[in-house]
Length: 359
Figure 1 (cartoon, one colour):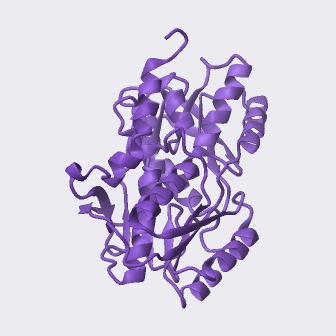
Figure 2: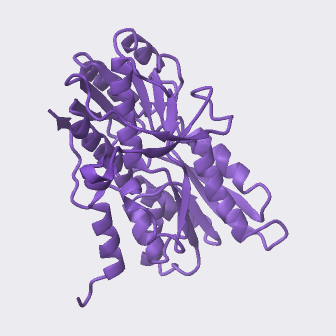
């Protein structure tokens, strides 16, 4: 198999098994069980979560109609969330309509989309572009149907349940990884930090977590670059960074930041000068971690989050909601464990394309 990277092919093949493994399609495997974190009180990440074994609804009582709104589908992270929702909707026998706002600056578009999409729905799932920009609209919709917050953190006014992880923990985990490489007292390293778009429902938390993670280390943030998580914007920000701060040691930011950094550093022949860390995990970061282009990234299992959101919506409609706030465990991925990672939990398979409707 000349020119074929066998380990990567094996890992991609493993991801392609997701629909069988995660749904428990094989009857011999028994009921599906997800090992999750649950927060009590709900919507409050200040307390440590409890580990639970969670069993999703096998089949919905009726063919409910669920609307799901995403910030965008510009990277494989949200495609993986989409995959989880689509597969769980099919498995549970419910309808799903998906809309996407096209990016974090598009609050007005998301508001318009969820008003239209939720009009004929039995439940609304929202991956928000803004922490509190949707609150009045959500409160209005919540008078009619359950509203489930998915992935991105959000003001809890009007929210019935939440699927997610602590984005502060996501930021802290990658900061702690960096701190482990450069403990306090060692030589100072300069970090360029790319938190993401200001006002997004996850950015303030990943920012706080990263700051905590590097607090007792020799890593110092010398420049911060804010911006939407589109590849073109991240490419421009990194090129600008390297012009004004050529002596930087680390670039740390979103998965799209990491992808862009790999491309720019390769083009400028500076791959060995500057190291890269991502604060969430996608197909791109999987590939680049394996190739030693990115050091590490935490995974929060986007396909599982998509599945949980559908299950919470069904349970909210049917009055069987037990846990109002649950999500997967956060795990750091680096070269040491990238090929032993349970990929069906973290990535959509290569064959999956964004899907906007399940009938």
